[in-house]
Image (cartoon, rainbow, N blue to C red):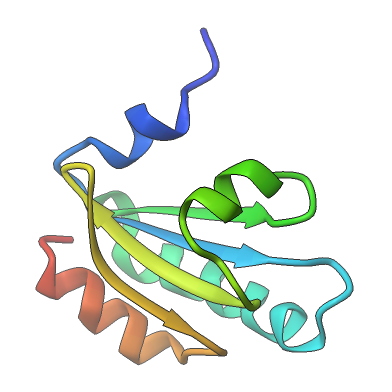
Length: 101
């Protein structure tokens, strides 16, 4: 199977929650297990991605990622929500459901 491109992933009709993080970032390490909990809670209703900003600098710059963690929700190729800082499971699940998860 061919590797999906970022554009293909965010252009679907399912909401996509992306955690832009860095391995050296303390709050990012706290956010990572929360993302796993969100994935379990929404199941197939949404996609959850974790993107390392240091390995994906061009994409991070293109999307205006200035700090980590930064969380974004995309649907049909559009940014539906964006926030910096650690967010809890319930907030993220509610946001995904609001966008069709």
